[in-house]
Length: 635
Image 1 (spheres, rainbow, N blue to C red):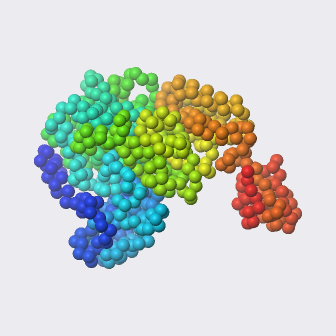
Image 2: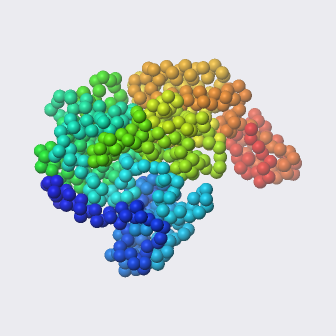
Image 3: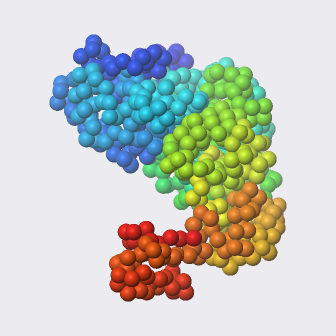
């Protein structure tokens, strides 16, 4: 099908809106009652999460099993089964949502398909064991709107994820998809589009936080016969899956936004740089691009406007440094993924030496809704200097691991204790790492700080692309700093000395401390060297890599002192600082620990208390794991 005019686009939207109407109405009017086919429901829809996390837990098999059972029952013509993108509630996936009653089933398995079809679809009764149980009240909650995980969220970039079929362009069009592109091409000048984006206050969501409209304006002013629009989909932070989920759940929003950007800056060519480790995101993005071409929303003379634009996909090999825009551009050119000094900025000389605008996935995902709802609407959300919402991948020692989106200005306490459901196992909160491996660790005293670009920077951390990892009392902050620094040392491109050598020396010092060989002088070295690297490294990777070290050194100084002065690790994570001891009053001499000791460090006669030789002990913990009488302790 070829959409030739705005009238054709509106006709598709009107037709497709009928498909989504039951989902729209269920979100507004869900009353908790079950609506099976025997209760008079003429038509039902079953939404199944098809994000990478749920697919890894067999959500595709749930889809197949439900379809098979509906065929057997003879009701397949009255029940539509739809694979969507990520619902966000990854801790409780796979997720299945029933329409029109909005029932939200969690941790579903293929074996549960029979009960969903027989009890809910046919019998009109909810499958109680699959409902989410609120950990605070202990009561079942059937509607996602009444779950704490969703209650404080505001889904803008994620507006279509978990709601539409990402491989059906008409469902996207029904949700005002491509309306912003049509309005821009037919009713606005490029300068007016850029002005709207600028007034919205949208800042880059890839980590830098540079004003998006200003960036577009720079590229617009550059004079060249060819310009490029680049989408940075090289998401490399440990524990981060924001961009991946958007591409898997709403790929057309990226296609539309890139076309709008192309029109605004005077470019006819778009490139998506995505890591090859994202096969599902690649598949859905390729599908979206193909469908947009088929419908005439990519290619020549879009909507008869005279504007032409098309998109290609380029693959990365997973180098973290290629998240930096100049390194990314070099990688696309077939060169080593290394950054270069700026200026010149990519807006002046980027891909193949031509003006290039680079934005990340989440930044682009905000563009269509800003242009359809207006800059004023978007800028009314968030804080004075950080407008709109932010998507976070919430992970670590937290009950509700998942993908969330909250207005800028939401506090860490709200995210961790309300949306996140608190710390796992009732443990005590210790720290939260924001901004991925380049971010800093914040403590309990920071929980009431409103989350925005400037507040996090002021406290020694950063927004980054949106990774948020929660730690509890069992985490050693020296080991945490070492973990993140080990990652950045591994991912350094090696081009500049501060990053290549400086971070290596930082890591060696941290290894020395966790091995029990550190001194107080080493703590001074960590601080001084970390600050020098921040001031002198070439790109953002090197400039921010000391953040985990400097922030933990600042907020957990006593813990560092315990490591170097007392040779103790309070979290009992640093193996070299542990001492295993057998309590003679509890040991019955069963000899099981001695049999399993790989270093023959345990001596003692059968039926008599044993002793651990600290000189031979390799601190593997095997003795403690094997002891049935809890006679072995570690300090």
